Image 1 (cartoon, rainbow, N blue to C red):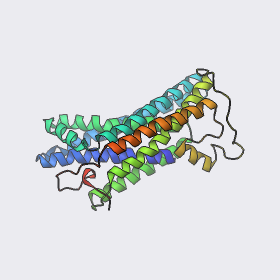
Image 2: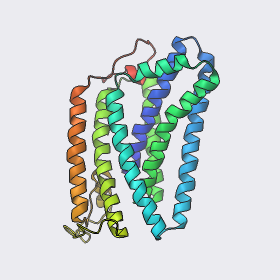
Image 3: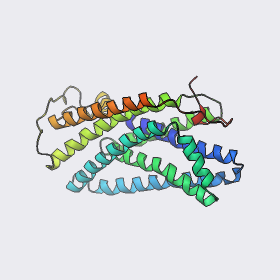
Image 4: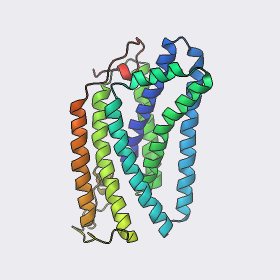
Length: 284
C-alpha cells in the first residue's frame, strides 16, 4: 500500500508537471483552443495503461501458483527495476531542460491531433511505468491494499496539483524529485531482491540459496510493520545470500550514481511564464 501510494504520488505529479508545461506553452502561443486535445490525449493514455494493467493482472491471476505465473512475476520484477532506475535518473538529468523540450515539441505540433498524440505519448510513458510498478507490487501483496494505496497516492497528487495551480503553493521540485528518487532506489533494490528470489525458486540461479536469517516468527513480511518495511526498504524476513548481495550491490551502485547526478545538476530552471506551473515553483 505504501509503495503504490508513493509511486502514484510521484508519477501523478510528474504527469501533471508535463501537462502543465504543455498547457503553458499553448497559452504562450495563443492556442488555448487546442487544450482539449492535450487533455484528451492524456486521458486516453491513462485509460489505456489502466485497462492493459487490469487485463494482464487478471490473466496472470488465473495461472496463480503455476510456473508460468512465477516466470512472469520474475520478468515483471526485473522490468520494474529497469524502469524505476531509468525514470529516477532521467528526471534528475532532464529536470533543468524539461520545460524547453516540452515547449519545443508543442511548438512543432501543428494541429490538435499532433498535440493530442504528444500528450498521449508523453503522459503514456508515465502511465505505462506506473502500471508496471503496480503489477510488480500487486504480485507481492494484497491487491486490495495495492489499489487503495494507488488511489490515495493519486488523490494526494491531485490535491497537491490543486494547491500549486489554483492556490499558488510553491513547491521545490528539485528536492521533491530528489527525495522520491532515493525512495525509488530502495523500491528497486527490494524488487531486485524479489526477482532474484523468484529466479532461485525457478532454478535459474541455483547458487547462493542459503538463507542469512529467518525472522518470520519475529517480524514477518506478512505483518503490518514487516510489510511496511518490505514496501519501503525491501526488507525480507528470510533472504538468501544472493538476494542480499544483489540488494546491497544495487543500493551501492545506483545510490552512488544518483548522488553524483544530484551533485552535477543545478535546480530546475524557472520558466518565463507568469502562470504558476510546477516547473516554476520553489519551496516556501
